[in-house]
Length: 110
Image (cartoon, rainbow, N blue to C red; front, side, top):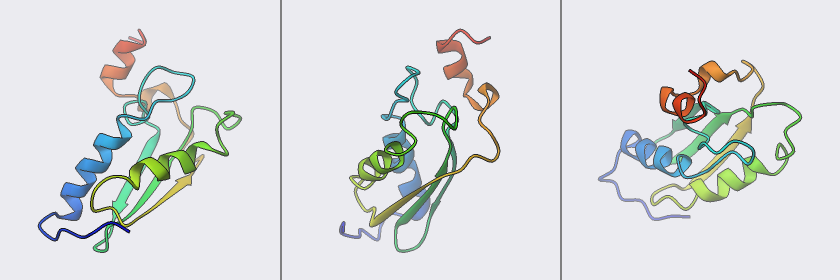
């Protein structure tokens, strides 16, 4: 468990969590999972527990079993995070429309 620094709010911590998510890349697409639109929701409670709902580009993705645990481990290293839970969801299904404009430009999808 990390130490709490009460001068940070859950909103500020969310920014730090997003920065970490931007360092994690999809194994098959050279874009980070946040810009790809794989992160559907990030909730942080007053105890600095982070709950992330995410999806993958396809249900048959070979990393479906291991990737959520990898993400949990990386987000857990963010200062002030006490606990992380990543939930893999398939609804709504991922489409390229969920990607950021920067990611679409990077992959030549415009």
